[in-house]
Image (spheres, helix red, strand yellow):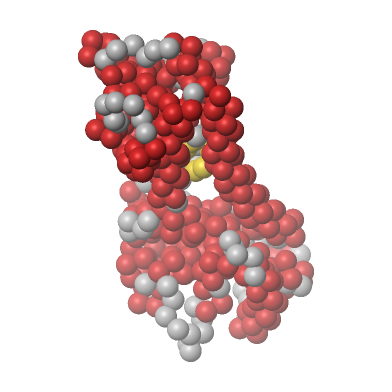
Amino acid sequence: MRPNERKGAVLAACLAATGIAVLVVLFIIQSEPDPMWLWATLAAAFVVLDFASVEVNDRLFVSGSIMAAFTAAVIFGPESAVLAVSLMAAVAVLHPDDLRERNWRRPAANFGQLVISAAVGTAVFLPFLPEGPVEASHLPLLAAGAALSAAVYDWVNFRLVRFIVRILYPDRTLRPWSKMLTNHLALAVLGGFGGILGAAYVMVGPVILPLMFIVFLVGQMGFHTYSQLRVAHEDAVRGLVKALEAIDPYTKGHTERVAHFVQIAGGRLGLAPERLERMRWAALIHDVGKVAVPSGLLHHQGPLTPEDHRVMTERMQPVERVLATVDFLAPMVEIAAAQHLVHDPSRVPLSQEQRLLVIADEFDAMTSTRSYRAAITQREAFARLRERALDLGQVEVEALIGAIIERGEAYGSPERESSEAVERLVRERSIRA
């Protein structure tokens, strides 16, 4: 067993053991949920919602199961709430994918993670649960308490998920999770609705069960719609990149590398995940205006003249203006416009996102072989960026250089001699042609 696998196995075993210990303690200090048929019904809803979780970030999945949890907490009252919700979480850990893959570490880790989160979140809710019968006057307090407790439940769960992913999947490169505040607030609101639904069941009775399940479904559909919109945005950006790659082979791989560079440099500067995501998308579309550039200019053999740059800019900008009319693309197009502004002496100062994009673009251009010149060495590319640091941004230049060195990545020609040899070969072929 490899060291990482051993570490993951130990973590999964520890989390599972902690989850079991929590359940044992809860069985001692709390009463079993009664009636069991109602607990089983709500547990089934919890499991279905959890299995229907959707991806809202890079391999981060959420669901509306938290509504079923706080509905159950109100129904079963302070004597059984924590045990009831923790047991619901415990039965939701075994996913069909784990059975097919014969993976025991993931369900074991999920078991501990979900039971701990459920126990902590529901325990916070106990002071908000009335000792006697639930009445209409209790609804505001129950809703507020459930929302607060759901936020705690979500916070604990999120922290455990991040910790588990880092330990169990050290080889996975995850993009920073953005817009998390929106997701956290959504889960808190769903928790509040769960508290209201639980109170409604206590006051009205089983006749309200169909309405409860409809609300569960509506809550889940909200996440589903958000996930679909996210995928649609990604597909739109990818479609634009593919269109450019079809007419300019050099672009293939270029935009992905530039997106990688801006992300690692921005990460080193400690930028928020939302800014990192915006820069990644800007990097992916920063050359898309080239679809309007004449083929002869786009495939020009040799460095471009100032006049060539002017013509290219004039052809690219109308495409960018059209893209800027699309709400979700507008901030990315503004960042991508930096490539036209950086050589304009009358320009306003570039934003930090724009400076990072220009630096990443220039670094990739220098370390990539073109038809008319060879790639230079990484060391020389670093030196050239530092020579222009006053114009490009010294902090941003050092952030990119530091991030590449720290990650042990290498780009460009491996040595100056080989770079010069490739350059001579390119010139010879050009002369023969």
